[in-house]
Image (cartoon, rainbow, N blue to C red):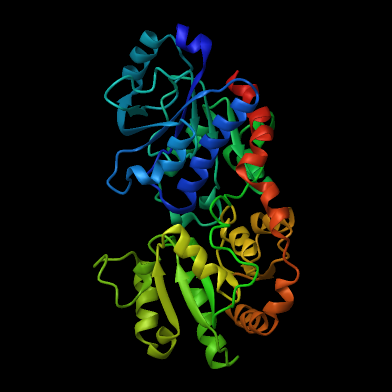
Length: 410
């Protein structure tokens, strides 16, 4: 071990794919908790945040990391055969049994992260398994493909599952995903770690006042993923306006959510589920008039829109839950969510008292939309106070996170 490593371990936190939105935010939070938690424990790890070399990122995306002394490095993936990887392992002195034929090596055109003592892989989305060149753990956001197989191609199992199986530990922040890790991925339960679920509320107090006048709309947070149930939600919206005589407009925001706008000039050959939504709205101009597409808003603008909404709508088939619900509650905006285990867990953990509906029943959703329009004030009274929610901030939970992770980092 080098003198640098002996004095201070270097840990790299990988964002394997070029994500924005909630995934990017969560991975940055993991890096920040590692740094802050280790500092409080007297360790003060040297943290490197590795992200795909992509034009979608700029230095301002990582400003919060720089403030904590976290370095960043862009990288790209290079694929090698098993024989090539075996040669690399001999040179690095770290070897594990190799079962696959091809592997992914993170490449920064310098040390390829071999100058780091431990790899914290903050997502399992790999085309080919990660090359085991350093001890590593994997943070699993969800295993959506178990419940929504059409979300991925036919060849996802090798990259996703083998990367998890080759790790020394697999982490998740909801009990449901821990069960997926055990039952679906086949990981020994003793290798799993349930880390604390947390909310990024830094900056959320900016421009907050004790009273915000609500607008005549609700906010629907979504993205371009097919599991977000967009078409079924539109069926429910049409029924809400036509049968339930709903009066609130629907404001839509989220990463690539503007792709669903029938007037969008982006993506001339959209994926089938996006085309279906555009066609549905084009055929129903009266419904389209009730919808405002905000797209992917800057954070403060997003908070402004969410704070003035009567309530938040969240509808997915399955995922690991959404922090938008916590951000909404923080701004006194009650939550209407599809009923699935991670969102039940989040509502219970944070005390959101969310209202739930069957994600496969547009008639029930339209009725719940009308009910929320009539009862949002009463639901607002059931929300937790700001001080309670701030107990789940990344700074508050960093010590607990560090206690769990330090056992595998060493």
